[in-house]
Amino acid sequence: MDLSIDLGAGVPVIRITGDMRLWGKQEVADEIRESLHSLMVAGHQRIVVNLCGVRRIDSRGIGCLARIHATAITKNAEISLVLAPGQVMDALQQLNFVKLYPIFADEASATAKAKAAR
Image (tube, rainbow, N blue to C red; front, side):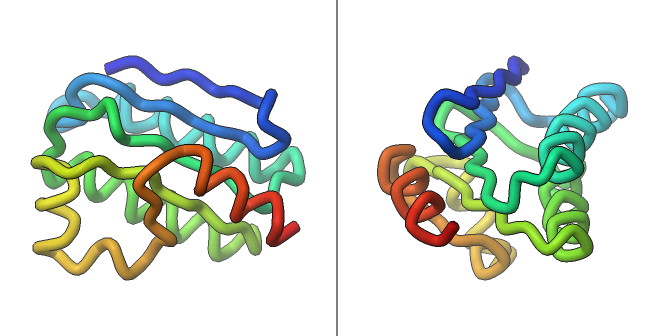
């Protein structure tokens, strides 16, 4: 799994690619949470997380997203997810997890909405 942060769009975009099956990979889950937490502490109220490059996700990966959502609530921030059709979208829909986040089909739409909401 790879994680990158792009601040160039005027709204922080975190891109996660690869395999987000985090069972037994606590350090990876911590890296994701710490990256988002540091952006929120720095004052970013709107953050886009692009998961289009994630091929697979497990319960630990979904739990990581749930903890990020809880942190965003306490920091008065909003996280938007960019999801492509596939296994990750299906898993999040089956759990009604997609109701927690604004969901977008592409990064441009998510960043435009986040900029407009500032």
